[in-house]
Amino acid sequence: MNGKYSLPVVKAVDMIWTSFDREEIRRGYAMLFKAAQQGDADALAFVARCFMGEEYVWSGAGFTPDDENASKLMQKSALMGSATGVLCAVRSGNFTPAVQRGMPFASFKEAFEEILSQAERGNAFCCYMIGNVYFWGDYLLVEPELAKEFKTEDKYHTWAYPIAKEWYERSFKGRICAGWGNYCDIRKSGLCAIKQDIFEFYYQMLAEISPVICNNYGHYLEYSKNNPQAALTYYAKAAYLGDPQGAYNAGHIYEGGEIVEENIEVAYQFYEMAANREHPAGQFEMGYYHFEGCGSAKQDYAKAVQWFEKAYENPKCSEKTKVQTAAYLGICCQEGLGVVQDDDAALEYLQEAEEGKEHLWDSIKEKVLIALGVAYASGRGTEEDIELGYQYFEEAAELGSEEAKEYMQYINSPEYEADERIEATRAIEPFYQGLAERIREALEKALREIFAQIGDEHIYATALVTDRYCCSLFLAVNTVEYFDNECEEPDDESKWHPDEWGYSDGHDSELVKLSRLLWENHNNLPSEAFFFDTLIDAMKQLKETGIFGERTEEITFFVSISDDEEAENLEDFSARQLNSPELAIAFLNREK
Image (cartoon, rainbow, N blue to C red):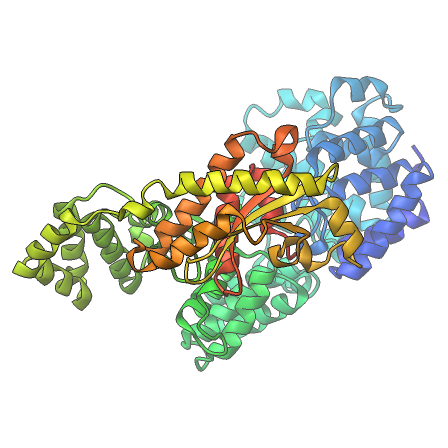
């Protein structure tokens, strides 16, 4: 209840809400935080706004949303006498009965009038908040009797929008961009006339300040003013100011080659900017470029899968992008491109892609249909269904796929029936039957010897390691104490490299004996995928024996391949199968 903001708050608000510069925003936040620690209630309210998500602060500022903590801080600021805290508490659903009773203001109206006084003296952020009070209908808390006059929302908006419009325009003149979306909604409503030249004046002015509005202005120029060349200028500018959508839009234009000459190299650079700022479609494009080997992106299936997975798991991923990403992940999992072959996962992705096939272009749709045909015709990830598999090949053939036609010709040929008879009589060789159980028994014996060496040390990781030929096995274990004593830096990469761990089975272990048998029977190995699944199954069995005791769920388990570029893929895949979601996520982020 100071009547006006302190100087640190005025400066900090300007730095955070008008600079759109991450370093400047950090300095502004430091000022706010210090003032809040010294008891400045308004500073506390603005600190809370920083953690309330992109509706309250620029998403590129680097603040991680924390609704629970933000709510507590906002309520506390209101209880301490911040008029800003009161208005924001109402807008964010934090104006609880306890806050209403405990705040030092006699009413919401008193808090409103304090902000109104600052707005009238020219504080741009307060102008924005006053505009919000009218726009959202919070003014009915100021003058409750007005509710009787406005029987419908339109009647209220017809009265309130012109007032909100004036306050938003005053905030724009002070470089506060936050009310622009509401201003545009007022214009679209038709309940308040905003002249075209006035609208475009503020639009262009704010586009020079806010990266988000800069990108939106580019979209406006492209689709409403039919000026794609000018739009590209603003998309690129938005990208360099830190807006991921602007970067994606610029990349899309350079890739399309319709507005400017096609330039895949430049498109890739903009897509990379978008992807690195967590833009899901940008992440998908990075996956696509590495999958196909476009421009400066060399074909690298492992990188492609990493980007596809980021896009797929991105909470902001659209249905369209998710379907496209699922299509590529399904193909990669089925063919073992950049990831351990996994028919079950492949089928799930492919079925998801099929459900949204209207989002796929013909070339990738063909690949999805062929992959589904292979899955069903060969019983990969599902029960064999030749008829259904053939139907998928037919659909792909209708799109012009020569590969699908070859599959159909093969199924209709005498060779197919002969191969089927041979396959039906083929069984897993006796040596590989029950192999997981034998590996588990060997692991148990090796572990008991390792436990004797470890003593009271605390195990944090256990790995079963093979080689690229699937012909050897060794067990590696590491402890917190060994890692801390042997590594100069706590985040040393050796923490997750089994070759550099402190403990493993001996030269005469049961695993070594089993390795000799693997060499002798290598020619009868059903497949690498079979072998890797067997190792994961053996580790599951080992974990379920309870041999690790009470601390089992604190230990990260995985399977690895020594000296092989596919090791990371197998490690990640096995870690997901063997650990709790929390441990698995931590392991997958081990290099970040």
